[in-house]
Amino acid sequence: MGALVKMLSITGLSFVALATLTLGTGCAGVAIQPGHRALYFDPNNGGIQHEVLQPGWYRTACPIWEPDNKCPRVDDFDVTYTTSKEDLHVLSSEGLPLDLHIAVSYRPIVAELYMLDTEIGANYFDEVIGPEFRSAAIGVFAKTSYQDLQRKNGAIEDEIEKALRERLGGKHVEISSVLIQKVDYAPEILKSEKERVVSQEETLKKKQLLANQAETEKMELETHSAQKKMELEAQTAQKKMELEAQATQQKLAATTDLEVKKIEIQKDTDEEKFRIDSSMRNKQAEAKLTVEQARIDKMKADAESVTRVTKANGEASARIALARASAAEGQAESASITPMQVEMHAYDALGKMGGSGTSIMLGDWSKLPAWLFPKTPGFQSAFSPVYALPPPTITLGGPVPAPAAAPASTATLTQTNGNPYP
Image (tube, rainbow, N blue to C red; front, side):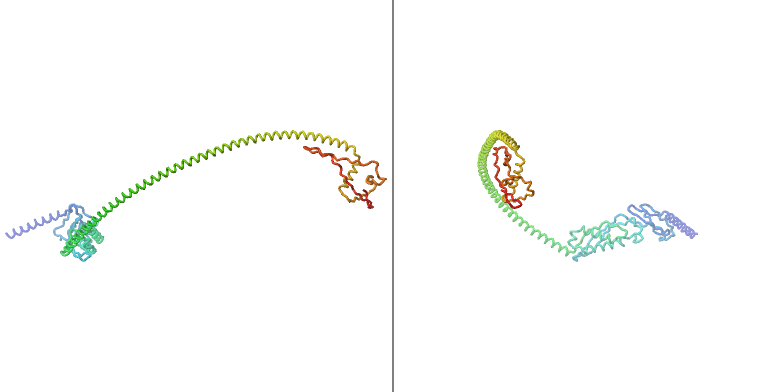
């Protein structure tokens, strides 16, 4: 009876526990906090899901009899920037040891959580970021000198960050920054650095003393130079004033001489101008007198010309009248000339044309005039030939010429038988 009660009690407890577990399993779930994202893994429904879960509560119920690897789960990722610190022991480019405390800030890329979870996993810092970070830092410090580490801290951090980003390309994480937090130097390096600093301080001090001394000497030289310059400037100014005064005097003297010469030249010019004007006036007066004299002479010449023309016209009229009278007298005389006399004059003219010793051949003797044979009795004419005088030549404007005497001309005629007739 007691055993049965005990068994029933155990069975009842087991049932209560089973009911409790079943009810608890039915209410199981996961809450995703702000700043986190998650992926849902269901082994009975294709494994990891692609959808990125936002902050909130997600149910992960599983029967109690199912093993853990068969139950759904949520892979939670902190998507805020996380800072991890690394202690590194590196060597500088001079081979000096350095102990560094470096921090790196990173976070996963939300859009690539599925690939990050399937390719690397939730422990991606230890798997990827940490090793790559240490390697990149060691590589950068190996090229950095001890002096540059103290003077170019920021540039070294940027170089490590750049190298780390190149190494983590395609690893689905984002690097924000790299910080060198602390550098621990070896004691001997500190001592050497202290000595170097002291030496630099002493060198700077000596350099400052030398600079101060040089500055003092420079100031003394500048002061001396300034004094010399002032003296030279004063001398130059005085000399300039003397030269200007001398130049002013010379200019004044030259101006005075120039004005005097100008006045003299003006005077000479005025006198010459007056002389030229007087000469011009005299010449103009002479020209006027000459014109008047020429006009008077012209009037006299015109009067004399008129007188001469009048006298010549009178003489010409008289001569014309005389010539007309002579012509009338000649016409009266020529009216009494016979044809025989004309023929005689023609033969006489023919004899003059032939000259002396000319032979004229006559054909018919019966037609010869009888006067050609004056010595032949049968041919002599009872009347002597009368020679008419040529008409007088009348010349206008001059005296009337006297009638010219008829020139004596003897013509020798030769008959065909060779007997001459005088």
